Length: 156
Image 1 (cartoon, rainbow, N blue to C red):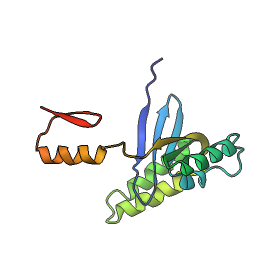
Image 2 (tube, one colour):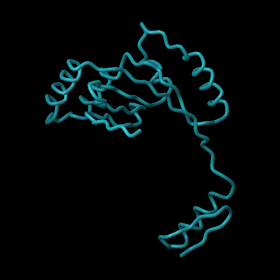
Image 3 (tube, rainbow, N blue to C red):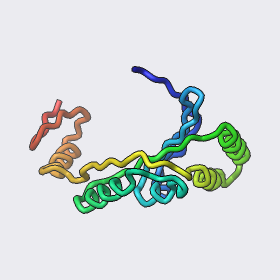
Image 4 (cartoon, helix red, strand yellow):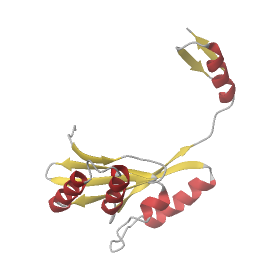
């Protein structure tokens, strides 16, 4: 089944925020989705809500980190129309401010809170055998089109 969403706002990832978020209109509902570093996202969970699989996710995150995996934690919350209106007004107020980026970061920080845990992902973050050599060969070749196979390069 295909479903259409309207993107209302996004706050991009950067090394200071260690997360990104997107606010969507899903029919009549407004939904904020956040993904990012485990410590950042977990600290933003709603403290007054039970998160039934928090222990399981925490256990998995611990296992993943011991295995050297790169992890992301996902969370969301339903946003009211009033919250969205307030967000728009705050963003409009800083649209031309000289310190706009810093102020938008503070607005996002205030908005990305009281989240409900969705889950986590892990990706192995290791280079495969011979990848450094393949990259070196690609750079040395001066070509722009490549087809990379394990242990060698086919140049066009």
